[in-house]
Image 1 (cartoon, helix red, strand yellow):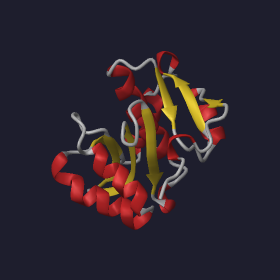
Image 2 (cartoon, rainbow, N blue to C red; image 1 turned 60 degrees about the horizontal axis):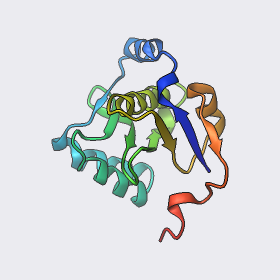
Image 3 (cartoon, helix red, strand yellow; image 1 turned 60 degrees about the vertical axis):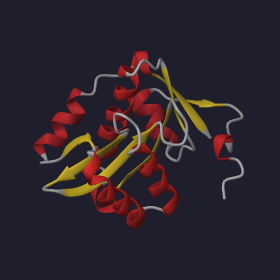
Length: 154
């Protein structure tokens, strides 16, 4: 299922980023020379398919992949405009680092970047944790969107 987010009505994100900062975690747009490291990390921790999408996100200008780091270690990633324009995802956080708000911060990084690019809405493609997206950014299900753009995926 896909979900729709009103970018013009995003909740404030400042507290999310302040909380991470206090824990020594930062999020930022990935840099082109980091591509090999980020793609390899995603491949190792998630899947070859997601690594392919991250690779595409690095071809965007500006790069449409954000990363979470602590002391030069990657903790998570999130992309937008990878499989389709105006789509958020994929995104993932190291299993040992979940529940700290990293995923929420990366979601806000991407959605705020999409808003700045002029999008009014964003589509979260192939949603896993629907309750998380509904609670965090008010995302709503898009009826009949399964399997959506991923129909016929090899």
